[in-house]
Length: 121
Image (tube, rainbow, N blue to C red; front, side, top):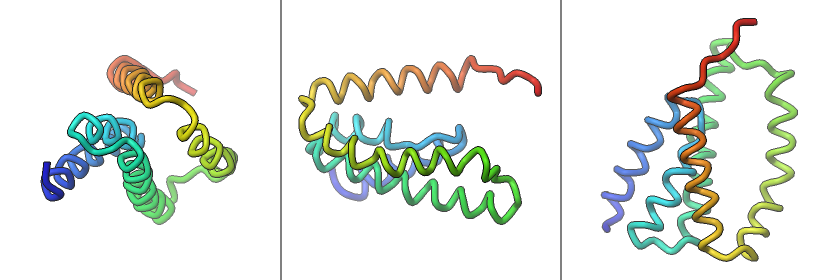
């Protein structure tokens, strides 16, 4: 698979997942691994793509006043502090288990995007 083809796949997945409000790394990483990209290359690439897409979405939402700081800031702090822990654990946990976790997250997020109906506040 060539770089332009991988970039096109990543772009399409990023667009689709950003419409659902979630990061596309959970789909990009297993897709890249399935296409022959080493997992230890696919994981940081997926996280980098997530960082860029979430940064652009955050800036847009800040500009339009749609970001709830009280809700988002604790999540940001926990995610930022736990990212190195996850990266370290990814070096220890066997590849097959990491891929099964990605599959589980894909199934969960896909099911939630299709069937979840938020409660009225």
